[in-house]
Amino acid sequence: MAIRGLFDRSALILKKSMDLRLQNQQVISSNIANAETPGYAVKRLEFTEELRQAVQSRPTDLACTHPDHLPYRGETLEQVQGKVVEYPDQTGVGDGNSVNVDEEMILLTENQVLYEATTQLLNKKLSILKYTIQGQ
Image (cartoon, rainbow, N blue to C red; front, side):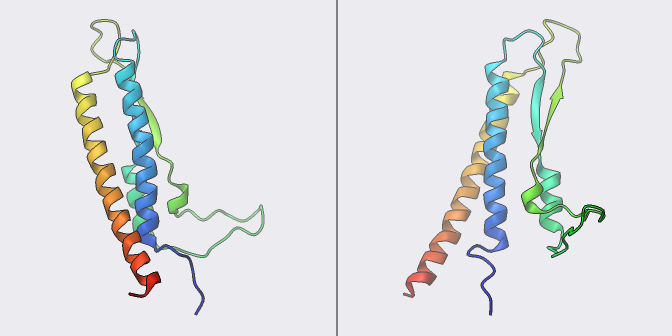
């Protein structure tokens, strides 16, 4: 029986989720830092749907072995990057800045809680792996 890898699919999903949450934290922090910048458009890292599709897709061993082959359309976990989308001010009032600091603080807190929960899950998986390796 061949060893496919040290970590199972759920551990890789947790790692990818943590990476995306870290990027999201940076985007939200940037929004807060630019709350007083005239004309600044709030940005959002959109990744949840892309991550969901990658998680729900079945892993496959298809590979393009020639440049003329059609690429496989399935999204793999490694390909999930998220997309930064700008939302400019639509009100037409004020300096054109679309940042709502209260909303950004809520998003920052939510993202932090989800990051910490993911960290705890990954730590639990690693402790199980450590226990298994030690054979106790």
